[in-house]
Image 1 (spheres, rainbow, N blue to C red):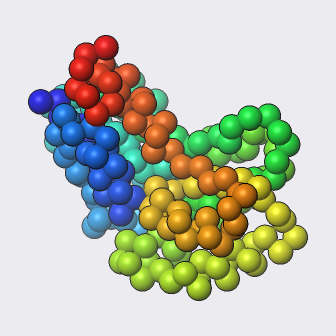
Image 2: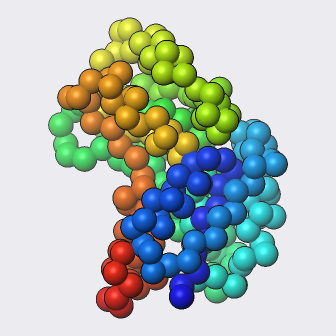
Length: 218
């Protein structure tokens, strides 16, 4: 059986691992969640890379694929890991760009560390839309602990969108998938909410050479 590591620093990795197991039952998923250093991944890309390298080191060369479910590590260090460990396959949860070409307003929910990277700035440039960034570092630990209330989410979103009416929302932190339904209710049915899970599954299937959920070779 093919072995896939799902790495993250919090509950988002658990969410993606659950999703991956449901969609790809023919694959053995190994969860590598660096809970102990969760706060360290919010400090910046260099610290996050060092922590990630130590967390996944025991699995490099021993599994068929490593999925980096931490958004900061994925967008800033995926190329680094591929160059350094050429015999190991890596993919990551990237930043999902909205579909289509209509000039809709977009709200991105992410961390301060992600928002400060050149990778994120290039992501905004490619969208060619009016974009607002809402940093939600304080939500992540509460999501991990199951303590984030709907009222807290609603108040923060209302405040961030007082003079900004987004028609699309991009979730750029894997934990946020846990509150996707709540966000949909708060934002309204006409607002489209994007996450990176489906795109990452497609990349995993391509890297492993199988069709999602079937285990058949391409």
